[in-house]
Structure formats: C-alpha cells, structure tokens
Length: 369
Image (tube, rainbow, N blue to C red; front, side, top):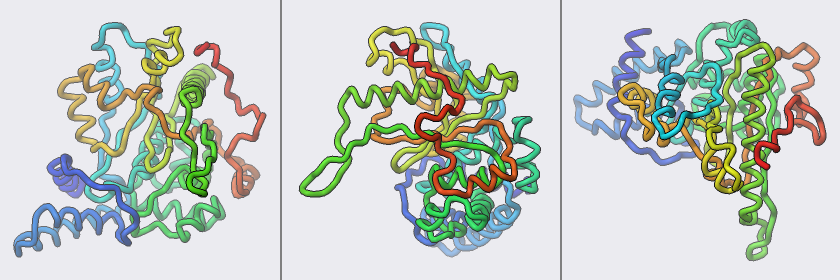
C-alpha cells in the first residue's frame, strides 16, 4: 500500500498545476476520471497506453483498499500560525484543534470538494476522544477512507433511511460516478456513523421577478453585511464555546454555498475592534481549507516559506468576500447519538435547529456593535 500511495502522490504532484473545469456527472468514478485525465496529459502513443494500464491497476488496488492515499502534514496548523504572525501586528486566531488537508487530484477535480471536505472532518473527528471510538467502530477501520469508500458509506446511509430527499435527487447512487454532494449528504453520512451534527442556514435571499420568472434578488449592502456578521458570530461562538467546555477539542466546520464547499479551520479576529462595521468585515475573516487546491500546493508552499502572502492567498478569507445569497454551515457537538436520536435523525428536517430553539450557541453580536 505504501508503494501505491507513493505512485499516486508522484503523479498528482507532477500534475498539480493542471487546470480543470467543473464537471457534472459523466458516468465515471474516481479511478476512471483519473485515467481519463491522465491520458489527456500523456497523449495516445503506444507506450503511453502501457503506462496507463499499469497506473490503472495500481489505482484500482489502492481504491479497493479503502484508505485515502494522501498523508496530511500534522504540523500544518503551526505553519499557518507562523505565516499569520509575519504581518505588522500580532495575530489573534481561533483555530480548530486538529485538521488534515485533503485536496483535489486528477480523479476528483471539478466534482470532489464535498468528499475532500468530509475527509478533513473525519481526520479531525478520529482525533477527538468524544467521537474517535464510535467513529472507528462504525467505519470498521481507523483511517480516513478514500472517495470511493465514502461513496459506498453514503449509499449505506441512504439505505438506512437517512436524507431520503437528497438520495432521491441523486437516484440513490453515487458510487462509480462524479456526482456532486453537499451539506445534506455530509450530514446523512455522519449521522449514519452515529455522530451528532447540525446544519445552520445563513441567507439574505429574496425572490424577485425577472421577465416573469422567479429569481433570487440581488442583495443590498446592508443584507450582505448582516449575513457576514451572522456567520462570523456563529463561528466565533463555536470555536470559543467548545474550547471552554472542558473538552478542549474543537473540530473544523463544513461550509457550503452554490457550487462549492470548503472547510473552516478557524477565525482571524485580530481587528475585531475596528469600529466601522463594513471595514471590520474587510479585516476579520475565516481561515479556510479549500479542496480546489492540491495538498502539495498548500503544504509545500507553507513548508518552504510560511509568509504572510501564503497566509493571505491560501488560508485567510475576509468576511467581506462572502457575497453569496445563501450559505450552510455543518457543525459537530461531540455527542454520540443514542438509539432514539439515531432513529429521530431519519425524519425529514432533523438536524436543523428549530426556529427559536436554543442549540447551545450564545449571542456574540456585541462583538460587532
């Protein structure tokens, strides 16, 4: 298996600068997509086909092994903190306890962001004492699964009755395909593994008419600012509340919006005291791991020179940059579902905080007033 991982890593690092267009399902799974793109790079010479056959055999063996070949740099969070500190002032960061970075490669570029983010969450949850034992038991192995294995786990979750509407939209099948997945699928996956997770919606979407058709109205500056503030205060409470409950372990968050998802690994609150609300949102922001990057881009640049430029380009995203009309954040409580709660999660609408319900999060809006 170590040899297989080395070969896959070598190919991916050699092709990490190749740009890919986002794709819809083309009927090809991870291995077929990998080979199809690799063939486009090496051409159609006779000797190339022999190499492709060997690579396919190696990829298939690795894929059947279920374990993800990418190996995260466990010191990456420290690298990021060092990079953030190379500015004009000492940074104030709220950062998750552990996360591994998993990025796109030839097999999933353009469609695999949901799976890569789920791998980042799994890497963290496998380190969390509150969730690790249950997760290893339910997975039946102690490692982060590869995309093909995760597709089968998701289908098992659907077969158990989780997220029936999302399952119906994808015809109940994702294995051997490049179908996108989002928040509903991620929640179904982790709920089936008996881990409590919830989804919080953030939206300023309003319906308007355009040539007789219903469309989402363009947001005003006030609406954008309010959404940015709401997302920031929610994340602030998440990273501070879990860190002060005595558990002292804070996993990352899953962030979804139209067409893409990323992992929130922390917050930069250095300039939270700026008085003007709009300028404040330009200064504070999320620390994100974006699976549209390759693992080698993010980790090698950080290792070589953890500069402020690296921090700004690869990790920090000001709240003012979040201009989409709708976002979803999935978060974990550290609680293992009881048998009754497990059954309850099979009901439509479960996993979303009820209007007016207290899900344990405080109001930190005073930070932004």
